[in-house]
Image (cartoon, rainbow, N blue to C red; front, side, top):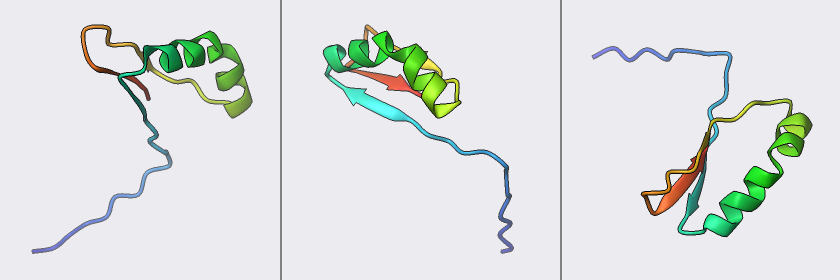
Length: 56
């Protein structure tokens, strides 16, 4: 079996906020500063019907 490593010019990062809507909301309130400071755009997934939210 031959394995191939694919190199991509990207980085995947996810913050999993488990059972803490206050933390997620705090981060969301600071979304503009977070994205400006990091020079990145994130996918903000509140997921209100689930136990956790995500910022990808």
